[in-house]
Image (cartoon, rainbow, N blue to C red):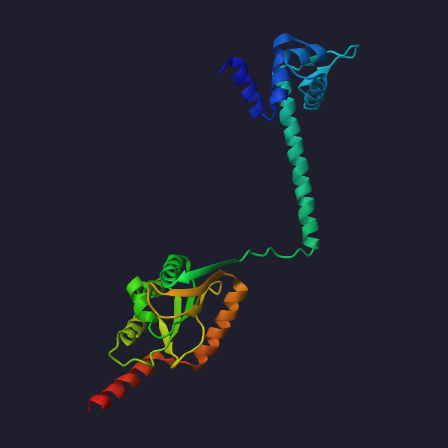
Length: 282
């Protein structure tokens, strides 16, 4: 980089445009000029030179002569830079005043609050569903609720879902779930997993012969709902919706609370299964 290029670069960094910096440097180096020779030396048009000179005059970096034809001279560097600084300071003060005026006007206006853009995603297989659910676990802060059909817990356990629930509880997240274990017994893997969740601090209830929608909701905002599933396995095709939408999540949460009020505490249901098994064996 030549000394002229460096000087021009520094002027641009000071707030001048490239054309302004080149013209001002030219006047510093070669003295006062009229527009025509300036246009020829800088390889541009007279109209372009006039616009740039007007801008530099406004910045206090160039002054025109009183005689005709008008000759333009560069103001000495120190004076020019001081003038540019004062102009920036004046502009900043003006912007601050406008900012305060706008803030006062905003207080009197009834602006609508900004709305978040909702995101929806179609999920086509159980493996993808489990992957998305696990990836979102770290972002859950306050509450996670879920409704699982029969057979979902063992599949979730294989993928790490039940372990993730226990981790959430350890972080202080409230975890509540509704499961259907009516087709199992006290020694089944599903019943044992429910007990593990209870031991880990999750609040689980049972809804026998549940035929409704399976879903989960995190922090009353992010949710997953299973629309169609043929069988419960990691490779099974499904139709599910993942959504980051507060309205949809609120609807699912309301559904969960209705089911929760009808469901039986899991500890009680497991006890009933144990008593039933004892009677059968006896």
